[in-house]
Image 1 (cartoon, rainbow, N blue to C red):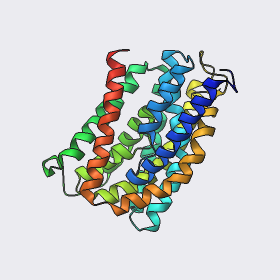
Image 2: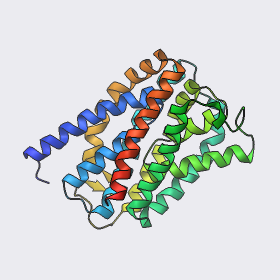
Image 3: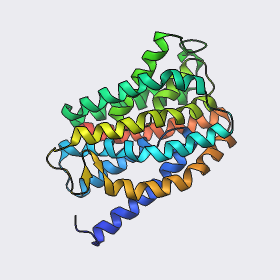
Image 4: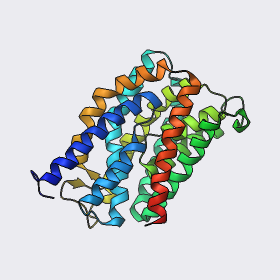
Length: 275
């Protein structure tokens, strides 16, 4: 890609705007913003002729790196409002990290369709659950204890690593299916994002090391250009998202998050069917 070209400036503008939207999403929904980052980067990398087999894992790995500062900012904002379940985060810490590392190993050998299918499946189920608003989906009145709770942490880490997200979608779904209020689920999900993004980004750097077809700015499956252009605006706008979340009713927050996930699912379903 020729720097200082018209194409470069167009891509840079898209990344900056997407970064601002990502920050708002991170604060509002407790997600790292990967549900927006991954499809945006997927399109950008396609525009600069990154090979199809490399395009999706590069988008996922770069997304995980970008999520690090947005997750920290979002988690701190929710924590000052007393909404984060810190005890749950402590129990989930190790299982989540182990799940992320397994996902990074899978990323080295899995075809692009695996990432897209996981993204569609998880985000689609979560969207239906949130928009329907029915309590019939609830599995229990609270989360399990012991090994069951740790297995949930491992699943969150594994699927989030494959999707390039901070775990907000999956954590929200698991917590609300077990009777936890949406505001607590959103707030705790922001903390989960930190546990996922740091080992996830490192894992994708290692998984992509020496792989053919990577752009010149990439370190493994992480694009430094994407990272540099996304991060500043995400940090600036995450606080706005936190204020929006706490100003909405629980039902409005569920509908907004569910509608957003539906849109993302449709985009990746189109890519999967026409790949």
